[in-house]
Image 1 (tube, rainbow over the protein chains, first blue to last red):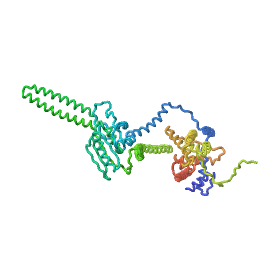
Image 2 (image 1 turned 45 degrees about the vertical axis):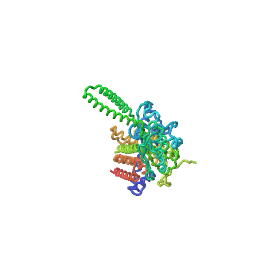
Image 3 (image 1 turned 30 degrees about the horizontal axis):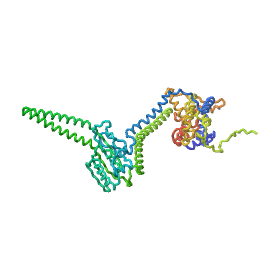
Image 4 (image 1 turned 30 degrees about the vertical axis):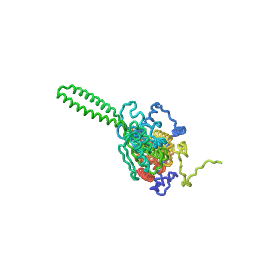
Length: 376
Length: 186
């Protein structure tokens, strides 16, 4: 077969069918006949097409679509591509910032991230104060206006969580300073646990800090060590407070009225009924007092939970934020955040791209088959 | 002194192997490509369509498409001739499909080149025999014959145009030309 094909090519090249084998020579002759019978173009057509080739196939200008349509096409295409990506990024919460990396705000209520500390605000002194003066603590403090600006008489229940990071050998000192600092600001330690072993060093404090001293207290706490995470929540309990207060006033008014009626009672039965009612009212007053006391305690004192955590690796070089290691750490977290976004985008874009690729390939196959069907 | 070239007759053996045409979009301008390939492209398209007017339209379209897409040609993917014939083939097949949609199912083979008066009777008879045999082939076989003998493509270029291996193209070509020979004897 290959010899015959080569012989055919020879004949086409030389124009001579001269093979020794009669069959092969016949194929050569057939090839030459086919070549000779090939249609030849009309010279006028050849000239016309040559002119078009030389002038670069000039086209009659089709009427341009209106500007809005020309502008809409790329805009729609861009929107179709960008919209899923934007939705994914928004749904995923965007790139996590270093401050919310690994932390997260505390439980329910009005969890909020607050603006940075006012450097002019007063604060604790001593070692913590000096440390605070050297470097800005990485904790966001509640603003002076509190959680509900504009209403002085609002009752807000506050809770703050802090995770402080320090070398293991500084943990005992920091634990002592947490207690001392709490006392200095008029608060108290509700519970604490500290372990200083190399393997499981750590500590947890639950503090009650007067709400009026929360800002300076937090500033001093943040100055004790590096703040890994912080969270704050606030819950408005004004309605509960007002309701309990009003009910207490009403109960007191009822008790006064009952006492006056008791003085004026003429029969034993009437006096006995008023006393029974007075007992009920007294119980109600006691319950409301307790409720108000509890509310006052919760709003006058903020709940501050402090967790002491050992630093990862050998970062036992002291100093607050702003060091080279911190910068490296921040850069790493930023890169992780960016990588997270990229992964999310790719998680959408890759399947879409794969589907588009498969569709394109399938479309090519279908187009080819439909074209080939013209030969069937 | 006469310096005009003199054609020497009776030479049926090539003294020098012809160099393969290494034509690329970079080394050859489009006008040169047109001059070199136009007759073969037209012959191929006309063989497929068997309609002179349609063949002119499709040839024109093919060269225009090739001109528009000339920067997309990649030498690594085959010769520029194979690339150009691929475009021409797609245009011709599109035209055939359009015709089918218009329900013009078959057009009688056109007498694309009537024997000139000086043609010998034997040659004219042989041409008619070959045309009749060609009509017995199916579309894909006629396409293969047209690529080879009207388009003048090598087996490798045919394989590139049809999207198959060179050996497969050679096998199919051999089978087809054998079938054509047998049809000529019927």
